[in-house]
Image 1: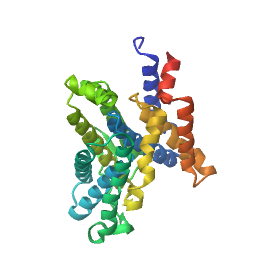
Image 2 (image 1 turned 30 degrees about the horizontal axis):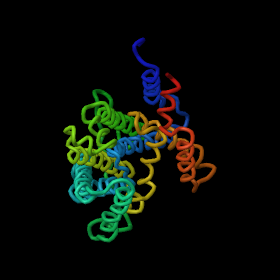
Image 3 (image 1 turned 180 degrees about the vertical axis):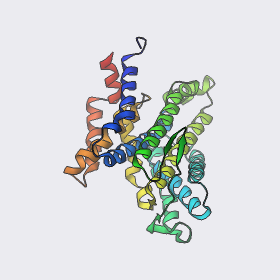
Image 4 (image 1 turned 90 degrees about the vertical axis):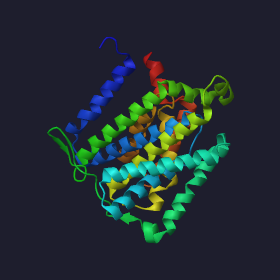
Length: 319
């Protein structure tokens, strides 16, 4: 243990608290739901940041989220396949749309790219909203099959019936996404992503395949985001276009990541675990319709007090 840095010890302590914390919850279902969703949104923010590491800021990731949710729900509804297989197909649909993004937005950078990603949300949303014979239109889709039970040795996670099981499933999902995010930063591919972000022309002159790196980033980010959307649909049992293609879901991963820190592998997780429970457990009771104000205030304070994010500030303080 003496070889572990203070930040590593803090992360291990936080992980232990999340794993054993449910044993001490008084109002279990509420905390299972809120913290479980914070894990899902942390996974969404981690997926978003993989693309952001190339310098491409997306405010249209809800296009992947909604596509994943609707693809998985509709395939499950019409074919009766396993929800986990349907969720994988939902992820693949998001990745396919990500490839279309790369082809269509290849010349764009900066604000034009961000605005193009936001506009691209309208394409799948309008299709889903109007193709009532297939998608049930603006009424949404109810009765989505729940995720199946998962067995790990003698432990059974009843994902369709137990909020506690969903809590641990989403905690594991966040851990897997966090590992992917960590590898995306601390790897040769991660260095290539940063090189592309800092100076594409210089990166190209030293042999970095810029176009391939950007394509890989958007494919991985879209796949992971769409899979989150698919899991969300099966957990909630109900989706509708205005929910899964919402502007709120487009802005949320950006806010969580900037608040937590874009350049720390745990930054998006920190942002989600700090802001979403604060919103749902405290702020919501005072201002039921004003949750956007909390996120707006968080962004202002971050830019003023923690320009590199709270994660970077904490890391400096521990040093």
